Length: 142
Image 1 (cartoon, helix red, strand yellow):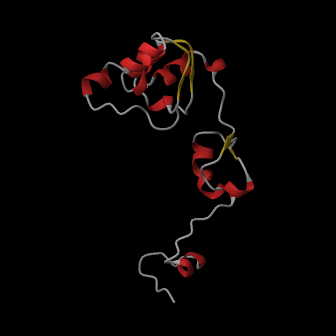
Image 2 (cartoon, one colour):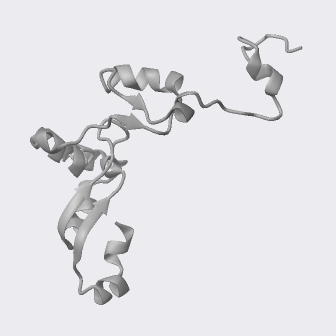
Image 3 (tube, rainbow, N blue to C red):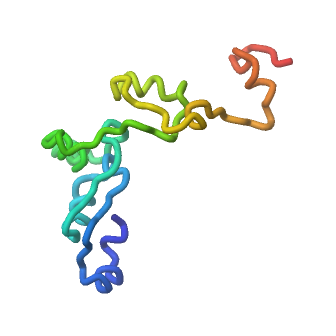
């Protein structure tokens, strides 16, 4: 999106793109998304409208609906055009459990066994991580 306003890029490509791909589209406010999409023949919005919405500081802009992303607006209007996230590669299975139940209806899966069983390794605290409850406030580490 930031490149869509580049005079050099627009001059080299004649001001048009074949496809505009907007990543994290659920976090992009509508004016920014539309500016880029008007330069393309077609577009793909990628992201998750159930996660972080656009950051809108102005109360007036929020009242006007600018805290709703174009992605969310289109997903609401055309749910049959939305491909739902099925496999994720960022969270271990235990971390994924809460958003999976609250947002994805239990349908979200880890993309690999490596992701599913990933653990955070902190070299300075290896013993503390191996003991259940060792990091609770007031507990003594041995």
